[in-house]
Length: 255
Ligand code: BT5
Image 1 (spheres, helix red, strand yellow):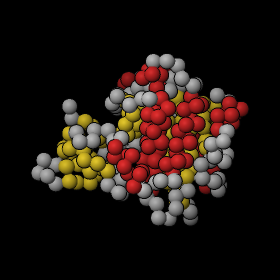
Image 2 (cartoon, rainbow, N blue to C red):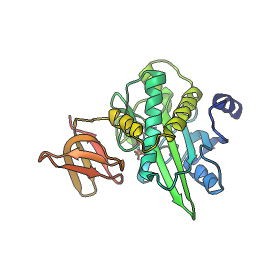
Image 3 (spheres, rainbow, N blue to C red):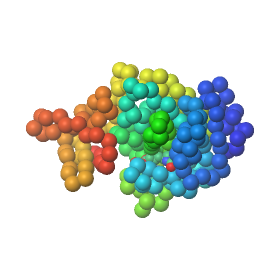
């Protein structure tokens, strides 16, 4: 991957600017700095390898050199938009790409993962900073090459790669271009009915029994969908539906 190849892949997509780095700590950090400096919506930071990639709650995200995709997009939320919907925007764009372009059975695991056949292939991290104005970056990591996975002892959930699922080699840049195209499309629908319909109909474990672990509490029930606030709705045995908000939670299927 180099600047010339990225420029070619992004032709006619509507990305105003991009910065490419052979290696970075975290593309989200660089994108936040760039957003603070006033970069426009859809400015892109992309790296060939990331040595301090972040997940939620300061967990790590591994992007092996030349194998995975690691990129961050600057977004400019409007005053009436819910910040909690932006990580779903990433999940929807990635899931839509895998289904439409790669014909893979992808689902969105609330709040921020994309799964194929129940295994995590992509993780998304939306980070917002208030500094007089709101800067939001959406970081997306995708396991493309067969060697993009960390050691199994570093995984808190089963994981896979696009090449493993497709069983043939695949170039990273066409995947990047498609995800960005779909991200721009779904950005225009954020918070609308179509957005929730897509999210709910591609939600992992919908209608299935799940366990949600919150700090100091475990909830079991049937995953019934997503609310308009982007909360996860669980129907408990007593028939009551409770809303789980994003935060320090873990969602697991009960088999
Ligand atoms: C995420 O967090 O899944 C969000 C990952 C976001 C990564 C992107 S890459 C571009 C941008 N720059 C960054 O610094 N971050 C973003 P979470 O749900 O907390 O999952 C983190 C957990 O996933 C870790 O604790 C590991 O167990 C596992 N993990 C780490 N690397 C993985 C990989 N390549 N594939 C699958 N699982 C992984």
